[in-house]
Length: 146
Length: 382
Image (cartoon, chains in turn cyan, purple):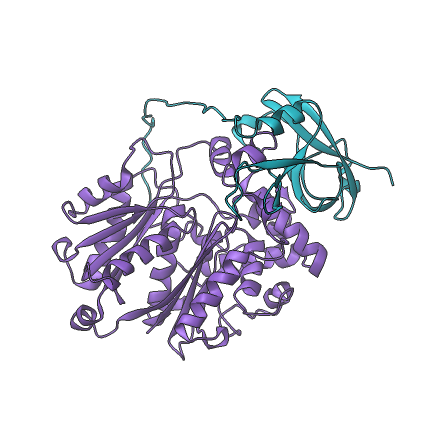
């Protein structure tokens, strides 16, 4: 079966939007991140510790989280290098995303910065850095010297 | 309840047709296969996963175009398992006594949206704020995390991943409805460009347009309609966290394990009794994980299974004889119903050159949504 492509494709009217990200219930998390601290939430009732943080506990339904500052050290559990990038990351060089098991037991997903590909290995030890990007507060990892 | 009619469109770049026109290409042969007309169907569940359509209510366009206005109608969404969710919904209408004959139709159009934008939309399949906003995760990137961990722990190799692609292209080449109807060499697979290391271009299924329809009927109705009904024996359904950080280890998909165990238990069937299976090979690593998650082999032995040809015709359990997502294509909402169409034809011995030997009359469809966010496992019996 041959498919007949129209010579000049007709296009719909464009539609673009950007949503607002609510930050009120996790305002403590965001303000501490802006000061350079990455926190996990810990339920004040049952102790459920969560990263990414949650304002409402999915275990006991309590809505009063406490905050646990992550020490910032961990080990790479898995990683990938993103070569084919999404539209809003166009122009970005290939980036490495790591899934890191933190000392406190939670996992954090973020970029691994300033690492040679050969040095990126499962089990490698990393440290957290925080900063502000064009899109708000953020964090990343760097390899720790052996 | 039983499957009494199936239909399948050509998958691929289908910019020649609109969404309802594409749905029609699957619905018409399904009606003909069941010897029914639209007036005989009392419920339609439409599986469409995409959020990019110019129409806000695309399922209604489909229903109208198929002459089903006035009938019960719902749109289902479970990411890449949307088609299976549509089938479960249709089956439940029959099980609940609200319908005698229902159609589940999965349809998707993905071409026409540029690659980086589609990568952006699909890359938001995890938890946008924690995984995409600052870190630009992509869909292949998620499966790459699974691949990296599986390779490290079990020694699974890039060659074994490529072998999955080669197998599925071999069978896809025999499927006239497949997106890619051509064989693939191991060399070409291994030398293709990196998408998300360790996954390369030929480790990834394509984006595709396509539709697949399944008509199900109550037991009584099915027996009056056909001498060769295919029974929907059981469905197992499970899910997992949106955040990949909140899952267990990345050595398998928990949702697949749970859905499979549930389906096998309900159907009183064991993996070794299956004659044929379709598994969710959106990436080659996903097929290896599926062998292990579904109990086709022990944990960690998926790579060995493909090495030994155990999932080809003549092997322990032939897998993805329609070409799988890899070669047949993966129009998100249509994939679940497409699997059921292919397996129904297998159980009816209508699969031509890709026919598996049918001994026990048992087939399994494994349809994952997202990167293990949803899983539907359906067991069919002839």
